[in-house]
Image (cartoon, rainbow, N blue to C red; front, side, top):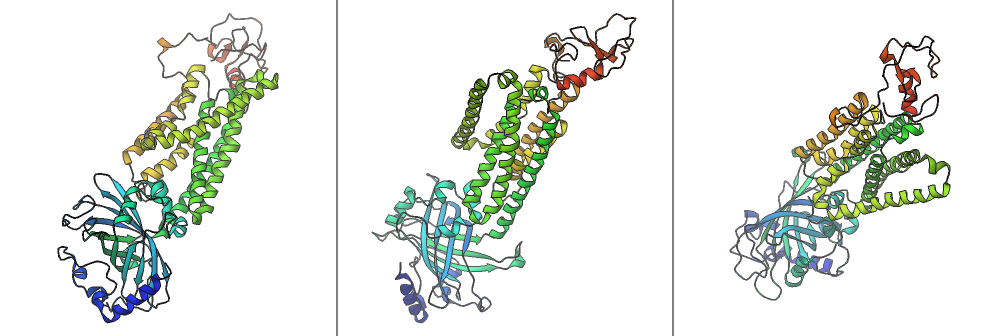
Length: 550
């Protein structure tokens, strides 16, 4: 690798005197018809006076575009003749100045997605070469040295665009394989039998022609692969067209996303505080579904891990994603787990106050199941990642356990309406951004109908909870199939003596049937007084006997 700049200098000096042989890795192929820039062998060294200026173009960055085969081979191709197919190409280039003025040494990689239609396989090749910036010419060859990291790995790991490659299939068909530098079988075969050569011309698209404030660069070139052991070729010549990606745009989008997640987490903290105040008593906490809170805690734990992993992968965005992960960790570990434990204690009053040893054993089992489900869910999600949309629907059924609990126990007002509406809206924000926003920084293709279905699904759950809150837990179930229910408004015989309500210490008017309530133990109270009492404790205020649901 140390001799490469000297060799480049020698070729450049020869090219200054004999343009026909300078920096031309692509061999003459009369059967291939290209544009005028490629048909003239001197065109690569014809200066464009309008383009020459005292400032060189730094082509370091990531480029994405298309490739397609130009024409049929002569039948000596070592690989499947795939002429007519096309796909997506991704170039990652790192340009460094050399000792020669006007010449930069370039290293990087090029990825051809769906190179062969019968295998749906991609190839990622190391490339190195020179960029002669006064002439806007790029000459590169494949480098097959070693199985270690790619030369541009240090640059690409700090690039926000690679975050999209890790979490989206828009960059690589297999993001993990495409990112970690491992070579697949196709890449090894190409490096073993072929001499891949790339010749390209670099042009600039001014900022006035595109959105944004930064200039973009465009590559137009030809890729050929003559076989090393014969006069044949490995595949049909490939025409490349790629444009640079404005990384600053994605950086800003990622930062704005993390700000959104941080704000949502702050709102969820306030909603949890409101709900904990609403069910601050032991009986109030026992009406809340343990599964519902546990499911939301697992969701926030996953989001915390995802944002933390994104910050580790993309170093330049670590602070932004670490902040979002921290707030999600606060929601998960401090508020939701605390509320989760309070609900568990409320459903087991005997074990939490009498037998501490039994309580410790049950608590250890509870934590083991919770974190076992958390870890197992990661493995299941990875194995079923092709069914990601269905898994998200399953996760976003977090209100269903509470609806079922309300029906079974016939509980009254277990959740505050603000908590129901607020959590429904904030939970929908992230999936709607990822799958519904056309300009999301993950570059994931939007699915409008899926987003509509998810919103309707969560809205139906929230609507049922609100109906249960205002009309009763079993308001939508036919009375014919409901069990017989105790009537608190049954008529009692008029008593000449005045009866006082022991809750408010005021007299009860027995002439109005629905102004008072009678317990099974024959104690009378004002309807409003007993209902407020039953929201806190399902015991008779007089004799402490348990009361049936109202």
